[in-house]
Length: 432
Image 1 (tube, rainbow, N blue to C red):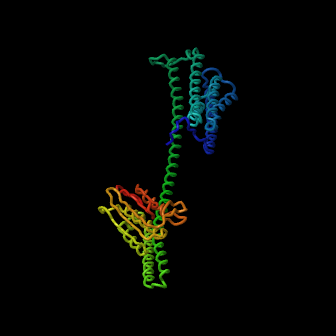
Image 2: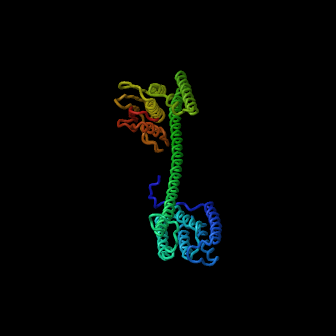
Image 3: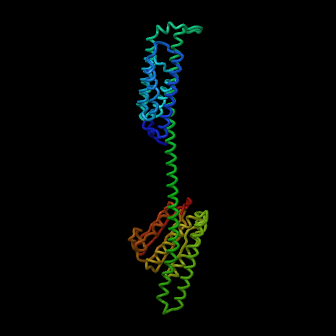
């Protein structure tokens, strides 16, 4: 909702349809006012002085009613013109009866409902109302003798007839101008609230669209992270095994056969994981299915075994009291180890790999270190044994740890090699 002061809001200008409606309404009011004038002349209902010529009567009738055609476009000017014409017509003893009075009411109402400047609209309306009451008092004062001579036949109330007539006229005018002022303000406030509701609806629509876009981007990042973790690890192991097979193919056929079997098994595992991911993406509850079917910390031993198959001296240890982990934490830990092992196998030229899982009091700690060559990825991925020009693996690890409000440390070790250590709190379920 808008917090700006009410005075600062400006009602939009009338539409073309509203302007056309004003023109037709003004034309109808003019016709009815002229008919009203003809009926008044036919009855000879002239209270005081004889009226001027018919042409002048028609002129003042048009002056009071015709400006309504511009009432929403120029509300201040129309109100002033109609008010002046109304007073001048009465001063000339024009029989301005129902329709001209309605035109004055409409002008005051429209100024309250459509006045662009609220201060000006309020001041002009108050000035017009004061002028009307001043004219009422002046006309009564000028014609007090004529009013006193009017026979009030059948008067039987406790108040003198002339005073009762004056008070009744004042009360009627108070109601007339009060309603015009009040309903004008009410219309303007309703228009402002409607505009605020439209603004809120638009902001809500925009917010929903942005939230949907963020959700799509988040899901794309999650899928990209999963694909990177699955493909990069298995393809890296296959590449190392293929290189080993090529080197020993002519000298030791048995070792070459072992490497080929490892490549075959790794390829099947990669295909199985890709199929699982595709099935998850096609499922209606894909995000929940991904969490329930993804590998967890209990499969870390397989990663270490794959590293041994790639020729590394790999050690794996679990420390602390093993406790059930939230599925998202278990998956995040597995993926972090998987990415760290992949980088060691593919880029570090290491011979020793050490993987440790520690169950602390309130955290799960994942510690992966090697004795390889620590490098810095030129692609902005940060320090570590990362692919040249890449660094997506480290970004993915940081995203997974950040999703659980954890801490990730990745960098060269003082005595050589590279180390990845992540601490993931166990206090809440994250969104990997």
